[in-house]
Length: 174
Image 1 (tube, one colour):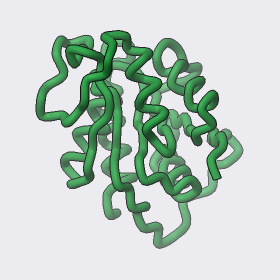
Image 2 (cartoon, rainbow, N blue to C red; image 1 turned 180 degrees about the vertical axis):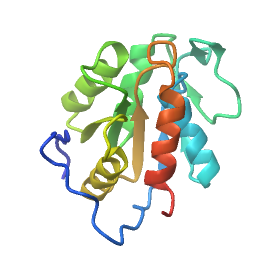
Image 3 (tube, one colour; image 1 turned 90 degrees about the horizontal axis):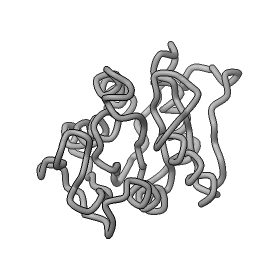
């Protein structure tokens, strides 16, 4: 069943003991710097299939998205078109941020997930239990394709490294 899922500050229970990673078939993102690239890097590191839709021309804030990321080019250079394609292509969307409230493309991603009735979780990486929140979301939604999104590196310095650490912990075997 698809629906909305936003982790509330009251849902802070630890992930259950003996947690085993949910079997994801694919991790997707739009390839932007920051959270998007961290998700793709972790998927490649863990041997998970990955991909997603990039803007036409593989545009990102630092130039062209490197070819090592297996993304397809969308029909438009508009980031919003790419964002919607990735939301629609996924079973669920995980948004990683350093702090709330959401803004810009990160806010749009959340709005599009709700519009398309896809489960979405917004996890603040500065939360003590961020990894447990990610794991709970994956346990509850059990997506085969997970869209991972969040701020670009220039708007949230350090977000890529923080997202990478959380995703390795949440998606890895431990």
